[in-house]
Every structure is written in C-alpha cells, then in structure tokens.
Length: 224
Image (cartoon, rainbow, N blue to C red):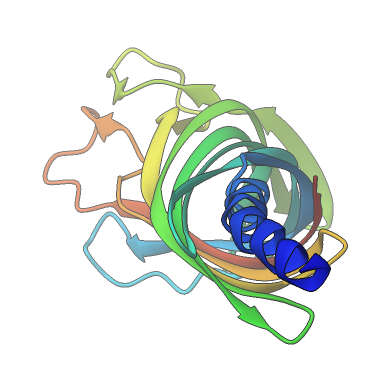
C-alpha cells in the first residue's frame, strides 16, 4: 500500500516537473559577446570596374537577447558596436578606411542539443548606423588622416578633399557556432551588406560607383 501511494504521488508530480523543466529551458536569456572582424568593401568604381580592395581587421562588442519562439527556435535581437572598412592599394593610392557603426542584428536561431551543449545556426537582417570614421591617405611614405563626413549626396560645392560616406547600412547576417552547458559560446559570423555606402556624387556624371560592406568574423560570448 505504501509503495502504491508513492507511485500515485510520483504519477501526479511528473507532469509538474516536466512543465517546470520546459519553463526553465524556454526562459528568455541574455548574452554579452565580443570578437574580431575581417571586413572589406566590395563593388565597382566610378567606371563600373570591379574593385580589388583588401581586408581590414576590426572588432565588435555588444550583447543580445534570446527569446524562445518554439522548441529549439529563437528570436535573437542584439546591439553591437562594430568597426569596419577597407584598404585600397594601387600603384598610386594607398588608403585605409576605418568606420565605426552601431548595429542592430535581428537574427532567427536554431539551437539543437549536441553533446553537453548546443549547436547554433542563425540568420537574419542587420541595421547599421555610422557614427564616426577616419581615412588614412598614404602618399610617398607619409600619412594624412581625414575624418569621414556622413551624408547622402555630395554637392558640387562640397570640399573635394573630404571623404564622404552614407551613414545608414543594412544587410544580412549568417552565423554558426556552439554553446557549452555553462553558457560560454563561440561562433563564426558572416555579413553581406545590401546598401550602397557611397553617396550620390553630383560632381561626377554617370557615376557607377557601388560600395557595400562585406566580411566575416569570430565571436566569443557568455549567455546567462
């Protein structure tokens, strides 16, 4: 009789234990992360020829929120400070662009149990806003540094020695990684810019310039 009572109690407790476990697994979580960027500008020059720019090394810092949508699927909005840019090296030109952005990634993530952790695959759009930038012009072994001015249109009256870029950027994120049971995670990231960075230039007729952010990187973070 005593054993029968224990079985009955256990029978009624199991659903509540299961529900509590599901609630624990499904709660909203937060993360802090940072890492390295390898960024470039891809596209065409004023004549429509493909550009052969070089990667620049930058970094990113920020965090995100993991919001459950369904078992193993999550919405993961975040906020990042990220540095991007490019190097333009030719026989006569050596320029290094370094631009700082505030970014809002809006990712959808799949997390599947693998070993004592989770494999992660995510994708989604990002929105970016340029807050500052510098260009280092190298001529005959000497450097000249200029601040970037953000605007959508270059007027004919604007100074010709000032570098201009659009402030708003947007594109797509893709990433994959692994999260340990402790909350420590690692991921590889790729970004594909969708919007032109270069402003409309009224000083040049039939300007075919089209520059877009493209790059990849590595992140380390902790989810709690």
